[in-house]
Picture 1 (tube, rainbow, N blue to C red):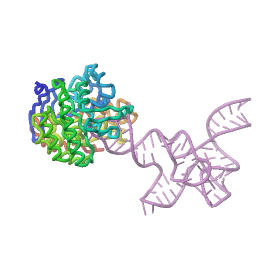
Picture 2 (picture 1 turned 90 degrees about the vertical axis):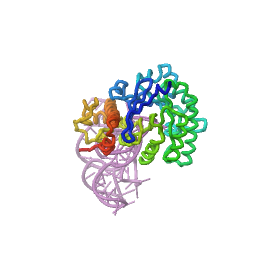
Picture 3 (picture 1 turned 30 degrees about the horizontal axis):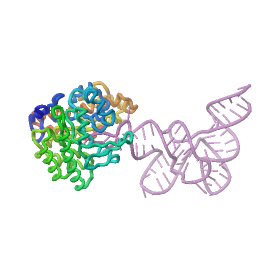
Length: 376
RNA sequence: GGAGAGGUUCCCGAGCGGCCAAAGGGAACAGACUGUAAAUCUGUCGUCGAAGACUUCGGAGGUUCGAAUCCUCCCCUCUCCA
């Protein structure tokens, strides 16, 4: 039964790039997909209505942060994350594995789990795999992530190997603890740093456990990009074709294109939202630091060819002014634009795959997309 | 008219004989952000330059080895009293 609920249909492959559909209890997701990050129960600066307009199909939430505030019991009583934040399309919750890295100064890892010291009030909280799943079950996201350690870069191979072993053990425990398999798909997370043998070991062990989807973690943590690309390319033939692959935390528009080319289906990243709030946006012609003084009297939209609300209605000069004044509307407009672009990027890529012209699409857009936009 | 306070680098504002091209804010400018401790953080911010040199602290003189800091005069603000 559960296979049906989270069925993944691989519709088409163009080279190694894949186009598919992932079914979830809150609707289908067309892959490749980008998932806006909504750590604290909101994609910062966006209303659910705006997210829908932009074309968002699934958003993230974060177990660690939502457990601390407002608390998963409250969210459960509100009807889960969907009810609480009034977003009735799919949601994915990250497990807190990333916080094991980002809050490294405030936690201690043991075989049992991770003891975090709250970054808010200093109180101690033990995150075991079982506890994390219990919280994720309460939050009720359609896709939930196993609890892992996202190891930093650089790290010794020895450290990565040990961490990986622990993460595999945790994956097993997560799977055992996960009771709500009818409504929530638990994804395993491949670790192994930049080492192919460890990645292979990790992927195969997880595949033995048989998860409905596999993610690739521990990348884009500071390693040279070539390593990241190498690993996804390496894992492509290893991971099962009939399950979705999710590359966690990636990335720039260019990273996304390369990794789609390496067979990845799902992405998330704070970059479009975080950078937008700080006055830097992404377009098909590269990134634009719209808060820069050179746009002071530029009355064109961010991207003349963009169909988003921001580009249809407002100028670079106005947006620069709003960002510069720290006006809330500025952050909202830039976020709308950048998320729209990211979603447009994967949508157009998907179309190219379905029409079996991915490679030429890639060569047309990849060179432009990560550069600083022509300043004219 | 009398009494007092003060004029510092774009702005506010410290400094009150050497360690001062001058603290600290702000503004401005440039940039970084990859499973969000992020409306955050970093850098630049007198001129030319690698070091170093040169011109600055209302103006003009002076004291001193040495002055934004002390003295004299002048200009200008502000507060209170008449």
